[in-house]
Image 1 (cartoon, rainbow, N blue to C red):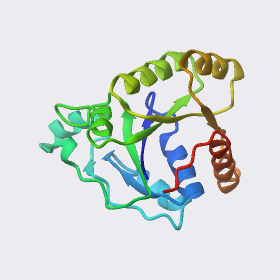
Image 2: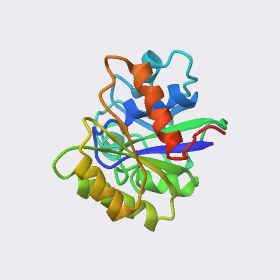
Image 3: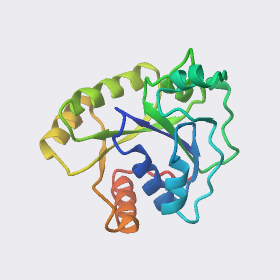
Length: 202
């Protein structure tokens, strides 16, 4: 299958979750838009030695919203026309949040809708996190995009989980800090998803 990894906000751990999923489910990796260096593909390559990594859909030198990078670098591309790699086991990592600009006209969520990509939403435990996660879930539903699961990264907050789960009716998995043993944490995340009857294998 091809799965889209989206964030409820910036810096919520999308790339860490992507690395864990690529390792656990043996998925290929594709970064839709890369803004600035070091690249997320480099991080994936460091953590997941056997993962097939495709060239990013569009590279921008400017570490900012893609439409700002396009302006500064005098680059013009049509984001919705960025082709997906020919892979049946593909993880597509977005940039920023769901409504981060994809180009001058569209946002990341528009790409997921255009290419009919089922989505895993990554959220974080921070003040305002509930609001960001619930807004993102609502947006995915309103766009008709299948939400496979919500993965929240960081030290778990059961009260936050309980409210989100009850309010939105979603399945929640977790990726706690994994620096001490990335491979163990990746397999733990895989087991948790499979316990929720979520498999990313084709």
